[in-house]
Amino acid sequence: MKKLYLIGNLKMNMTRDEIVPYLDEYIKVANGADNVTGICVPYVYLCKTAKIIKGSKALWGVQNMNSEEKGAYTGEISPKMLQDFDTKLVIIGHSERRQMYNETDESVNKKVKVALAYGYTPIMCFGETLDEREGGKHFDKVRKQIELGIDGVTKEDVTKMIFAYEPIWAIGTGKTATSAEAEEIIKYAKDIIANKYGLEHKDIIMLYGGSLKPSNAKEILSQPDIDGGLIGGACLKMEDFKSIIYTNVE
Ligand code: PGA
Image (tube, rainbow, N blue to C red; front, side, top):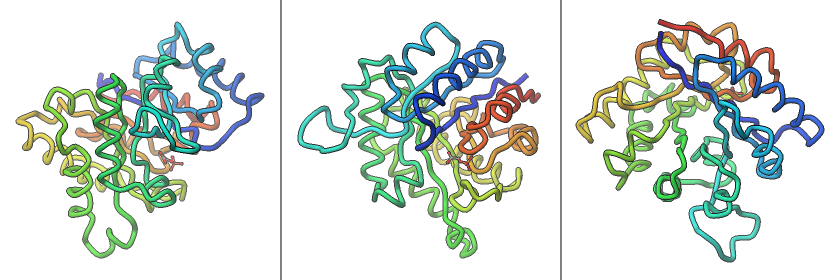
C-alpha cells in the first residue's frame, strides 16, 4: 500500500471555540490513520494547537512565515518564533499568497531555504492560472516556479521538502483537475527535480491540491506520481477530511 501525505490547510477559518473540538477530533483521526497526515493552522492558534497535538501522530504547522529572523516587519512571523511551538510544516508560496500578497518565486525561494535551515518541512506550492493553461503555458509556468523555487537548495534538502501542485483554477472552485491532468504535471515537475539532482521520482514528495474531496480523492491519489493531497475546503468538515485521510491506494 502506498503511504500518502494528506495535509489540511485551514486558511483563515475557525475561531478558538471551533478549533479546539476540531483538533480534539483530528488527533483521533490521525492516530488511527495508516497515512501520514498534518494540519496547517492560523498563527493565533499556535499555542492551542501545540498543546492539543503534542503526543499524537499528527504533523502540524503554519501557512506562511517570513524569511527574516527578526526586525521591523510589521505583522509578520519569523522562523525563529515558530521554533517555540515545535512546528514542523510550513506552507510556502501558496497561490493565494502569490496572488494577494505579491509573493514571487524569489521570495518563495528565500523562504524555502530558511525553512530548511531551521529544520522545518516546507510545503512549496506551485501551479498555473486558467489563462496560462488555456494558452498552453502551464508547463513553462510550472518549470519556472520549480526551478526558481529550489534554486540553491541541496540534493539532501530537496528530498526533505514537500511540493504541492495546485492549479489555481481548481482551488476553492469545486473544479478539480482530472487525475490525468494532475498526474501529467506532477510527473513533469518531478522530472525537472529528478534531472537536476540525479534523483528518482520516488525520492520526491509531491502532492495535488485543488478541490480534493472524498468523491475524487481515491482516483487522484491513485496516480503513480501523486504522493498525497493538500486539502483546503474539505478539511474544514472532519467527516470529509477523515474520509480523505483514510484513503487506501495500491
Ligand atoms: P481547496 O484548497 O481544497 O479548497 O481547493 C486547496 C488549497 O488551497 O490548498
